[in-house]
Amino acid sequence: MYKSISARYVAVQRFSEALDILHSGACIQLKNNQVTCGAELAVLFVETLVKAKIPYDDETLGCNEY
Image 1 (tube, rainbow, N blue to C red):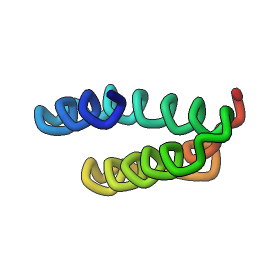
Image 2 (cartoon, one colour):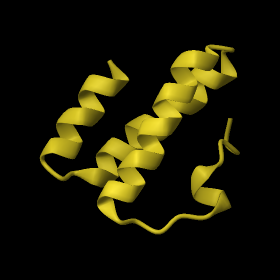
Image 3 (cartoon, rainbow, N blue to C red):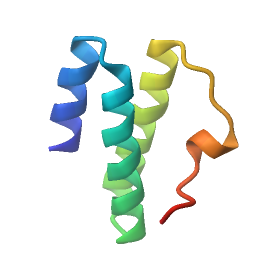
């Protein structure tokens, strides 16, 4: 579900919404030991940052709130 919704946002260049969903989903999945799913969402998160040409840092990439 996370992947399909974020792909729709990316397709219409609503990168902020896509990043929010991917970040949230990756953190939730990893918190619940769903490593493969969390890792896939994390990779999509980074790919979306690159595609949108959005600068990032350690804070952007972290799951600190979880």
